[in-house]
Length: 85
Image: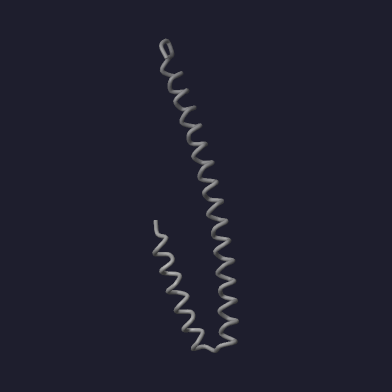
């Protein structure tokens, strides 16, 4: 690094910082795409769950549907509590 001007050092530091930021942007793009895929999957599962609830309600009636719905909610909440980071 001896013999280089201040401008050359700043230019190289800027280039290095730019490359690091570009890598960071790429990593965030990947994370964003993964999050979008997860959201799409969750929406599909929610829609499927809604269809099941409606079908169950038609077959067993509202009171049974409410009981099952509460149980499903409790199971989901306990599952989420077990898998918290």
